Image 1: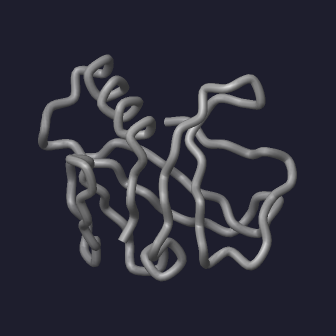
Image 2 (image 1 turned 60 degrees about the vertical axis):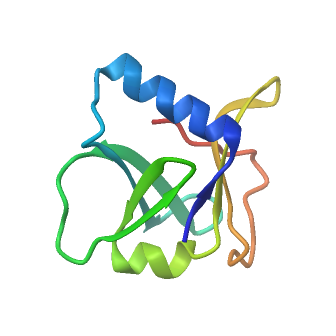
Length: 108
């Protein structure tokens, strides 16, 4: 299951509203190989379910993950930072064996 912080929820709600997306949309989260830590996280809004999707909801944010991503992201927290050290979404993944030292963050 993926959880979301209050700051991330507020930013997701804001992005959905600015984009004119209704409640049929959810946040698709996936993991792909690459990036400086060996994995890259992807976020996007979607309203079409795909075969094998796993759905979770936290604080009113609905997430869809494919099975491969689910295995990597179980227990992950999605946060949003708007500080001086970078602005964007950050994944706090307890399953990660190493992390990126570049302060990588992700935007939708």
